Image 1 (cartoon, helix red, strand yellow):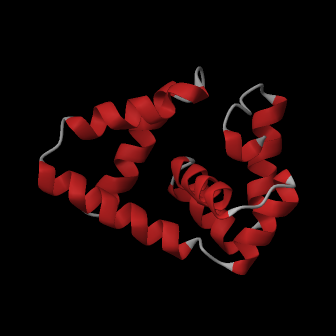
Image 2 (cartoon, rainbow, N blue to C red; image 1 turned 90 degrees about the vertical axis):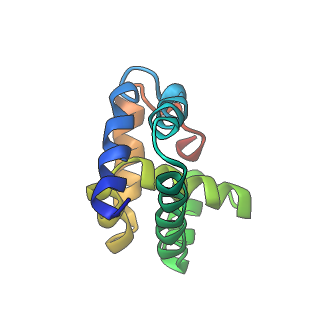
Image 3 (tube, rainbow, N blue to C red; image 1 turned 135 degrees about the horizontal axis):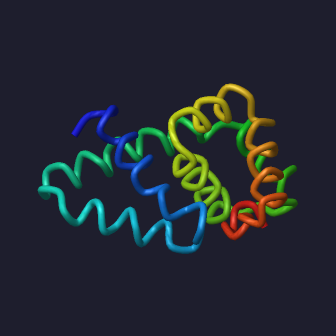
Length: 119
């Protein structure tokens, strides 16, 4: 497992997201369950790396401004949601925290705001 494969799995898991945002995690679990244990462990290592990368004061502020919520658990969910959006959105959100607000607003307009981090 490398970063390219990591983002490919994230992208593949998004196929269900447009129709059923609540099923996104289930799809990701199904995709990972087909992998070798070593690959699953590396997926988690890479995921943890991106969770840590997004653990900035700017991202904390963006999460709070977007949702008017704040707790460590919520912020963890927010960062996980940002990763689940894919490589392009993750790096756009990481470089410009306000981009996350644009993603949430777009999801709300399209009736896809089902993720708790965009509530």
